[in-house]
Image (cartoon, rainbow over all chains, first blue to last red; front, top):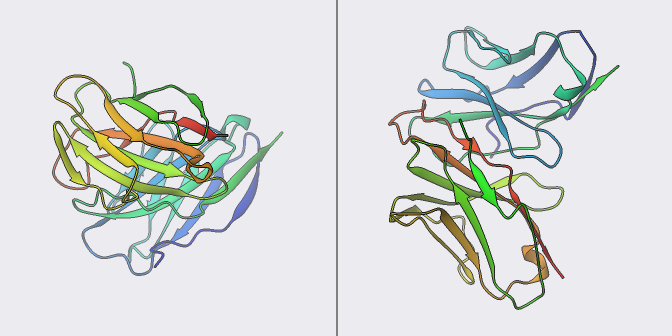
Length: 110
Length: 116
């Protein structure tokens, strides 16, 4: 029973912004949107999370729609090292079992 | 500013042997989670531990697998009598144990277990 839907893959040009969409139409009011990425053969890396306001940190920006049914992760200036599988995860308060779906395989091309 | 540490990074065992995977959480973190990633699959939750307590082991196979997080030392995931189907990447994550969804889990580099 998937809580999120992501495109299976996308390409991005190096130096350009990468916009990764995620649909979570059944999200409830106390559930957060988390993003992780997994670079090949490495452990998942936390990127960012948010509840309803847009968030920004040194890695990325998270834009959540007003109805909270979808969000976009933005990598402002993609580099080759950003090539990875990106996971969008909906997580409720006190949920500790992270549910990793198939994610989006992002390939940054020179 | 060390992150989550796991060792060994690679482990090769023959069928029937035991595998011991270790995880040292980030400094200040007292909660540990183990996940398994089978080849070409996503990560699956296995077990959640706090110091000296197993909180939730609902994702652990009923037999041959056990986990502990002693008062002193790293968390250990132990697999007895390994079989080829146990070959996978095993990831450990840790968190501070804050109530609410701000309790972000940070992952280690994983241990890749290969069973011959």
